[in-house]
Amino acid sequence: MKTEIMGAEGIEYAATLIKRGEIVAFPTETVYGLGADAFNAEAIAKIYAAKGRPSDNPLIVHISKLEDAARAADDLPDAFYALAKAFMPGPLTVVVRKKAAIPDCVTAGLNTVGIRMPAHPVAREFIAATGTLIAAPSANASTHVSPTAASHVYKDLQGRIPLIIDGGNCDVGIESTVLSIAGTVPTILRPGAITEEMLSGVLGQVKLFTGKVDKAPAPGMKYRHYAPTVEAYLANGVQETDKLYAKLTAQNKKTVIIAENGLQENYADKPFIGLGDGEIDVARHIYGAFRQAEEGFDALIIQKLSDNGVYASVMNRVEKATARPSGGKLSE
Ligand code: TXA
Ligand code: MG
Image (cartoon, rainbow, N blue to C red; front, side, top):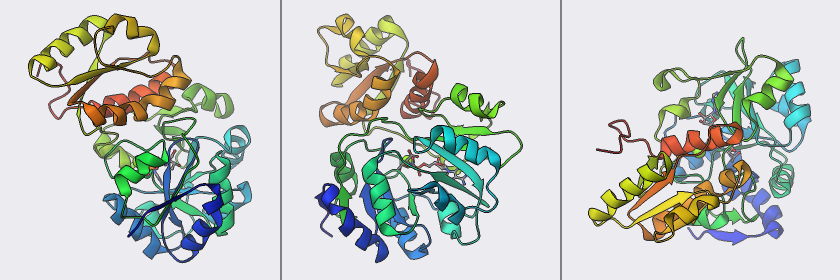
C-alpha cells in the first residue's frame, strides 16, 4: 500500500477513507493519532495490525464536540462536565463507563472508555467531517516513541496505512493525561500536560496511580513503551552524565547527550541534542530528540529533569524509555 501525505486539504478525503472502514493518521496537539471509526470493529482491527499492538490495550475515543461524548458513554457524571469545562478541548482523556454501542475491541473488553476532545483544529475538523467518533492510539509502531511530526509517522507506518494528514509539529509533545473517574476517587492513570494540581483544582481529591504495573487499570501501562531503538540511559547530573559518556564511548558506542539547552555549556565537546528550556519546551521536544538520536547514534544519555509539574510527566516517559530489564542501573 502506498502511504500518501496531505495537508489540511486532505481532510475530506481522510473522512471518506474512514467511512469506508480504512485507517488514517492525523495530527493532534499531543502526538499524532492513528484513527478509525470507533463503531466499526473491522476498521479497529486494522489499527492493531498496522501498529503491531497487543489487543488487550484499549484505544481512546476522540470527539470533535462535547455532545458527542454521550455517543460513547452512558450517564456521564457531573465530574466529566466539570473537567470538560476546564480542559476540553485539550490534552486530557477521561475514562468513564462505556456505552454498549462501542465495540469491545476498542476498549479491550473493559466496561469503561477513554474520551478525549483534541485541541488541534485539523484533528477536530477531521473528526467532524467523518460524522462518527474516532478511536485512535498514537500513530507509532507499537512500543516505539510516539510521533510528534508527520515524518515520524511515515517512518514507522509507511506502506501500512493509506494516508497521513500533516498538521505540523505537535505543540504539547507528550500523550494526553489519562484520568479515570469511573471509580470512587479520580485517578491519574497516565500523567501529562494537564497536571495533578490542575485536576485537583477542579475535582478536589485526585490520586496518582502508583500500584503494580501488571495490575494496572490502564492496561497499556504494563507494556514497554516510549522506547527509542538505540540504547537509552538516564543520568543524574553532569558528573554522572560525563562518567557514563566516557564508559559508552570506550565501548565504541557513538553517544549523544540530551538535556535542556542551558546545560549545553557543560558538554561543549560532545554531541548534544537540546530540549529547549522549561517544562513546555521539554515536553514538546522529547520524542523528536529520541528519534534524532536514532538517526546517527548507538546510545543516548538523557540528563534527569526536574520533577515538578509537566517535567514530572516528561520524566514518566523518560523513565520508561530508559528502563532496563535489570532495573536501569548505570553500572550494568
Ligand atoms: O494524547 C493522546 O492520548 C494520544 C492522541 C492520539 O490522542 N493517544 C494516545 O493513545 O496516546 P495510546 O493508545 O497510545 O494510549 C492510550 C492509553 C493507554 O495506556 C491505554 O491503556 C489507556 O490510555 N486507556 C485507554 N482506554 C482506557 C480505559 N478504558 N481504561 C483505562 N485506560 C485506558
Ligand atoms: Mg501510544
